[in-house]
Length: 420
Image (cartoon, rainbow, N blue to C red; front, side, top):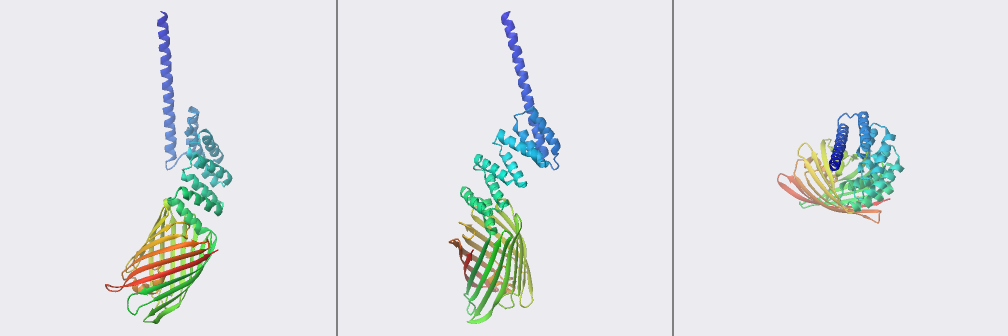
């Protein structure tokens, strides 16, 4: 009899255990489903933040240790512009379980948006300590310096994380953009000698001097060029050209290029105008769209549409540009390998057709644009003692001068600049 009572009690306890376990499982399933509903609505085209907050509060009440509901609360409060509540729940998630990387990212973004730079920096340091291999948090630190116009710390930290992520296109692009916006003034000289293997043609000389002023808004370059073209030891064309060139940083991920050149001498076109709009994208991509206009000394004019796309591949930069013109298109493929700063690189360029951006041959652009040409260039550029920029470029241009007849044009170009 006693054994029978003990057996009944054991059965009762077992049933209670099963019932309790099923309740816990049902609650887990219910809260998981509720969280799924919240997340699904947040991804919809027209999320209901107020309803999501009510759902997340209910889920938090049912499962107090379920941190995902607190993160969902922070995100919905954030998107609903209730910043104080959002900040409270982001910090709550970080305190409860710092392994939620999204909470750090959302909190940093919100502080950057509200210009709470000191708090954002503190959170960023903490996140980097916990996630040393997470590039996003390190880039947030770069963004923080950039927003405060602290170019010194921005450059310093970019160089340090470049060592950790040596082949990252985003970092390379940021470095290049930073160097392009640093306050720099430069004076320089350029000389190009063109030899031609056809009897009685050449050589050509092109020399220029320029001054560049570079600031956070962009850069402005003034240039004076002199050209002299010989044929059978006689001067066939010579003269001066005056040019203004500018890069303007209108928005964070875009910039514009403007070029205006004028000459009254036959060695150059009368007018050469250029405009391009550049847009940067994620993962080191860049695209550009522009126009070129050339008015020759005989009043004939030429119009060209140019389209380009570029990509950073670690320390490499590749760019393909096409010039769409009346008689035949022109193509240029440019590759660079940056081994230090934006002034230290080696380059290899291949092209077909005559480009309106080729200053050496601009005066003959009208007659050359309908003829074939194949071009290959190799160059080396280096920054010396942080002030002197030296560059050397060799170009082999196989140029059709009449139907199916070609001449070899060799360019030897030297660049020397002083930056201060």
